[in-house]
Length: 334
Image 1 (spheres, rainbow, N blue to C red):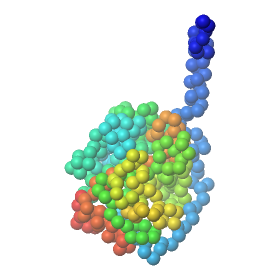
Image 2 (tube, rainbow, N blue to C red; image 1 turned 45 degrees about the vertical axis):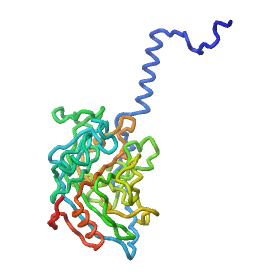
Image 3 (cartoon, rainbow, N blue to C red; image 1 turned 120 degrees about the horizontal axis):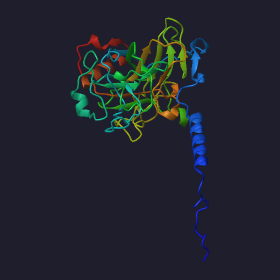
Image 4 (cartoon, helix red, strand yellow; image 1 turned 135 degrees about the vertical axis):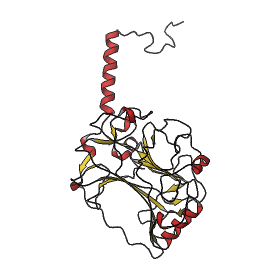
């Protein structure tokens, strides 16, 4: 019998403690090199160096060209947590980074359709929908411990409060829109885009004084300009589901021309724009998973439709009738 038969090649090999410590240090240094905890200068760009966006193609003859604007505040209540009720329902801290919320005042990991429908809201007119996105932090200032959020998982720095939040529903460039189903979940962007190729990355960054320029990098804005991030949500619904296994299949993005894919239906196109007073230089970054380098391409947003049928009908009518409306213009609640 061969006494070495079946033994693994390194079985029984003992390394000196010093060697083990050196290997551990080398691995730690390699990990830091591969997974930097702060964004690099390549993630920032002067907005003056960004080209202007091409003009959109003119809408078709059956287009819904209206717009419907809501005022849901800018999270003056400080509603933040590290939950994601759509991606990680029931898991407190499951997002591994902190989200800012407007709209529904109760949204957290334990929310259900029933609790969301019964909660208060920051939206004028009573829309109880939930709108949320990762916080932006000032990286040259320490985290305010009084405002620190459990579950931030290494995301540090002073949270920047939005100066403004715009919530707008738009139509479709080719056809009339149909109502969203109540409790439809929508995702915009991808929190893992920096490491998976970025196919689902959609968020655009810009500066308020140069609205015809946008970028997927962090923009450095001129004096007097607000830093903006724009989240355009998918608007072609499958006609059946309010959610799906990957939380994306139930609603997809239209083609570049604006038309929806076959077997999908155009619904109101949600656009959320969040604006901030920019810190000086390269001193701001998103909350993100550690391996994502706080990359700007990981920006994302989540929406849960908790509107009443009457409010959704009012939005659809406004868009299809090519009008410009505001939620406060109508005596519609919920």
